[in-house]
Length: 371
Image (tube, rainbow, N blue to C red):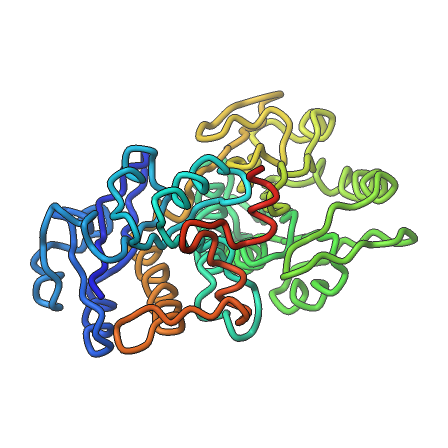
C-alpha cells in the first residue's frame, strides 16, 4: 500500500500526519509513503529526512492508495482523492455531513481519527488524547506569558511574592496536563470537573478538587463528560464563582462530542476577576466555555484577558506531529495486514472510526446525522 501525505492547507496548521520515524517503521510492514514536497517543513522535518527514511518525495500524493492528513480535507482536496481509495484524517464527521456524503459518493473509505474509541485497546491510537495533552501544557504556558505576575512564590530582597492562583475547569486529558504544568510552574492550583471520579487524579497532581455535592451527576461515555442538568449547572456556577473571583488564571477545557461547548465562565464571573487576570479557553473551536471568547484571538473584558486558543497543539508542531504520527502508526498496524487493509466492522476500533466504505456511510450515528 502507498499512502500519500500532503502539506496541510488549513490556515495556521503546522503539523504533519506522518514523520520520518514512522515511514521507516512501517516500511517493514509493506506500507510505503509518498510525501508532498515541504509537507513536514512546519514541523521541522525536511524532505531529505523523509527520503533517508525511505519515502518518495512527489507532489502527486492524491493518487496514492490512501491519503493521511491531520485536518479534514477541503472540498477541493476531497475531489482529488482517488476513487476507491482511502482517507485517514480528522473529519469531525458528526458535523460535516456534506463532506462525508461526498466521500461516500467517490467510493472513498474514510477513517475519522476523532472517532477512535477511548478504550484501553485503542489508547496507543488515541490522537485526541495525545493532542489534548499538548494543548493542556501549552494553554498554561500561554497564560504564564500573558499574566503580569510570577507563577511561583518567590522570596526576594524586596519581600515575598505570593504564588499565582490557577483554576482548571475540566479534568480530562488537557485539564490534567494543565494542572500538572501549572503546579510545576509553582502556582496554587484548583480544579473542577463534573465527574467525581477525577478527584483522585487531580489531587495526585497537587491540585485541590472543587466538587459539586447534593445533585445527581450524569455519567458520560468513552471518557467524555455528559451534559448535566440545569440544577447541577446552577450549583456548579455557585461553587466556582468564588474560585473564579480569586483566580489569577482560569483554564477551561470542557467539551461534549458533537455539541457546542458548554458555557462555564459567565460575564458575571469575568466581572468578578481582578484586572490583569487571564482566561484561557481551550474549547474555543467548539464555541468556547467563556462568554466573550473570540476563537483564534485574545480579547479583553473588564480588564481580563480572554484567550480563545484554536488548533493549540500546532503551536508545538514538532512533538505534536511525533505524537500524531505514532498514534497513526499504531492505527495503521491495527487496520492492515501485509500492506493491505484488513477491516472488520464488527471489531470495536474499526466500528468506531470507519465512516464510509464501498460507497456507503457505515457508521450508524454519522449516517443519522448526515440525513
